[in-house]
Length: 71
Image (cartoon, rainbow, N blue to C red):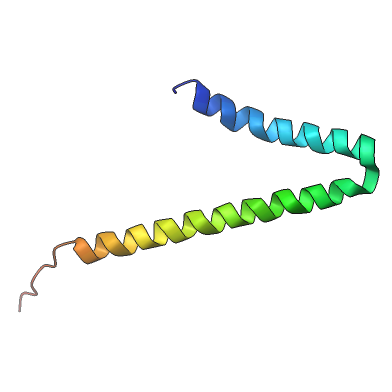
């Protein structure tokens, strides 16, 4: 995992860009539909990640012990 994760993080965007370039050569303007689909999926995944992080933060705050106020 020490090598695989960084390798995937680098090669996946390069592969997507290469795929978009190949789509441009094969289908021309239809690459815009493919790009729109990829951007929509990225936005959906980002929304899910943000929701999970927000809920985890709220749960951690709810479980944290509260300190009594000193007067």
